[in-house]
Image 1 (tube, rainbow, N blue to C red):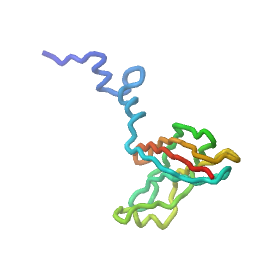
Image 2 (spheres, one colour):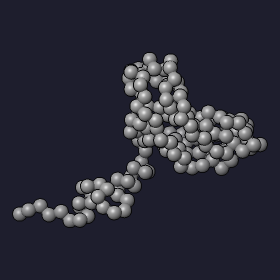
Image 3 (cartoon, rainbow, N blue to C red):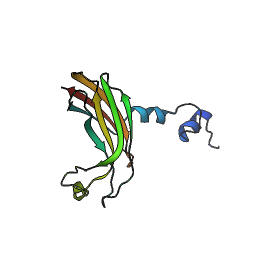
Image 4 (spheres, helix red, strand yellow):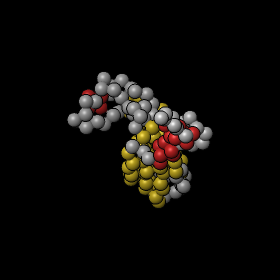
Length: 144
């Protein structure tokens, strides 16, 4: 008695071998490794640094740049994504803590509100790190 695999079973075994989005594709889009929310502040009409994404090896060399995608645009401003450098902020127990005193390659995230806008704005980012981690971060920006 031989092993019999149907076309649908084969699609499940060899991901990406069948037409259309696979279960793995759909799950990956909606299931970040880490989801977090943050509250930040900004001055109206001014470009404000929000955060950086970086991935470095224990010797402080870069693993490569991350890919940040805006999932939800702010209603009253814009997200600015730039490649640059940033200081890491690893905890004292992390082997990379010695890297905190030097800038390393990073993706920098900024927010800038419309001129004259004050109040709360919101944006959501998906970021895939060079290390393979997938983050979804939601930011509430209090604009003054």
